[in-house]
Amino acid sequence: MWMSSDQAASALGVRLTTLYAYVSRGVISREVVAGAGGQRISRFRRDDVLALAAARSRPRAGAFSELIESDVTQLDASGRLAFRGVDLSTCASWGFERTALHVLDATKAPRTLGAPGPWTASREPVGSLAPTDTIRAVVLELAGQDPERRSLDPGHCRCVALSAVEASTLALTGRHAGTVAERLASSWTYGAEADPRRLTSAIDVALAVLVDHELTASTVAARAAAGVGTDPWMVLLAGLSAMSGRFQAGASHAAVAMLRAWSSTHRVNHDWLPGFGHKVYTGADPRAALLLEQVAELSPEIVAVADDLAVEVAREYSLYPNIDLALAALTLAADLPDYAGEIIFTLARIAGLMAHAIEEYPHGLRFRPRAVS
Image 1 (cartoon, rainbow, N blue to C red):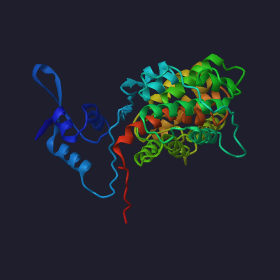
Image 2 (cartoon, rainbow, N blue to C red):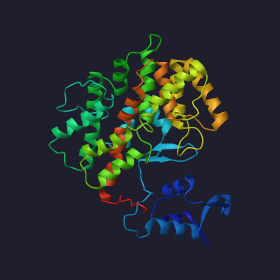
Image 3 (cartoon, one colour):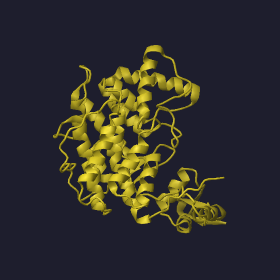
Image 4 (tube, rainbow, N blue to C red):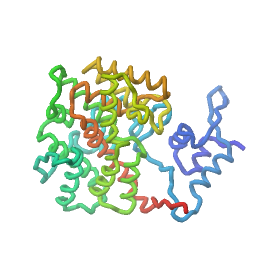
């Protein structure tokens, strides 16, 4: 009737860490009992384990597997988030560059982002194009310049990600020297009251906590592209394109508008609450908490406004702030362009997209959903 943790993990063909992730996400339940010596032991109902194993392996042409085992990111509904087993708060203290290399599992890579190679031009947004189109344009440009474009070797994939971040930062800021956060901070016009050092620190934390977030829509898009053997540049483009929607990287735009409106009217748009709620977290988004701590160093007043809004939304809708509200607070606190949050989100996630692609390449074609008719 009962199976131990080791037996359950073996039956499902996953590691213990993945089994416990299933528990935290509500995929399977467990019972904790006292064992010999008083230690707590987890056990699983045999029928539940076998049913889940059958669901994961059921032969069905065109089936879409919802449970993907990954070493990149671990998160659960309680609010725990870790990159390759390292807690989010530690990664935030590391800063963006080190966190990106960690997520890419590039332990032997240089501790700074690499030079962009032949890319030297500095692009500005054209016409009505979104500023993040600059990043996608850079990826496409670099793809055409890469003599090893078709290589799926992990080392090449890591170089692709680092070059994409470096070249995009150069194109957006026109600056060659400094960390990504330093160059973004110095290129954006910000309020006279904003401390450049504190602004750089806040942007760095924002970049670090946004490097990955498990299986988002853009990550699945990148994995699906990798599954058909797409070259790493086009894998990035696939993920970045999916990310541009108003419910992912673009959500901070709406959150900025909402926070600005609340500041002046103290009214909530009841039709949509950008910056609040999450598909995974039942409580607070740990990324938001870490970033808001940094924003408070820039402008306690803006954080107080965000807190007032959070109290109102919690009272009426029982929703908690997510990373988009924190990005909106950063934008208003430092008088950044309204698109700043989208730029930060998009640049940061390049490393995560590529880390997932590296994991996915060996699996081949497995993303094949089937329509219900």
